[in-house]
Amino acid sequence: MQADFTQTAAWLKDKLQRQPVAGLILGTGLSSFTDDMEVLATIPYSEVPGFVQSTAPSHRGNVVLAILNGKPVLVMQGRFHFYEGHPMHAVVFPTRVMSQMGIPNLIVTNAAGSLRKELAPGALVQIYDHINHMGTNPLIGQNINELGERFPSMNLAYDPGFIQRCQEIARAGNITLHQGIYLAVTGPSLETKAECAAFASWGADLVGMSTVPEVIAARHAGLRVAAFSIVTNYSNLFHDEQHSQAEIQANAAKSSVHLKTILHHLVSDL
Image 1 (cartoon, rainbow, N blue to C red):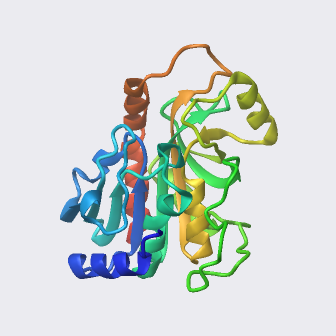
Image 2 (image 1 turned 45 degrees about the vertical axis):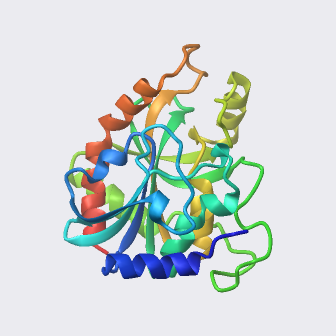
């Protein structure tokens, strides 16, 4: 039985008593993002009606109401992945809760593998398009008409205004902000070399196991979306070494300060 995201939205609004200008989903290695923000409330996922548990490494599993550059934001310290065994409706449940709370903007972050030599570990990449290679879609099934139409367009899914503004912020701050196409797979096994070569030939720059379902659900509900990847490792197109969680989290930390700078200014515009 699917949880009622409308009831959860009402529950959170009653608990938090502030209207966030944006929702922020933190990916692997980025849960510490809120450590130097003013935190108004922290609610473990286990206490939020309808939320499942996040089992991914380094995901703290809290909903946090925090102040970023004077604006309230709703932060998810960790997300739900399809590979954890959660049904797709549970993966996008928090996104739908945000839409029902009246939050108009969604900022999504992730850790990703690089399919391009020029995108080295530690690089910060703004996603401007994606390829859904997960074999499923969060909108499959009966359409939820109160959220959006049956066949929502995914053209310009990543808001052009956000993309332009983030590039301006990066230039002003002397930050290297790449742009790229993100390809989503289910995981949890990492990709073979042949798969990575195929993905690169399709035009993908990054590969990961998240983000796309949340973006689809957000666009279905009419939210404006900005998304960022921190490159945590080269794909095996470039080496034959095993990846470790320590390596991934260390590389995620490299560009987190630059990402925070960009989001600090982006949120101030909202």
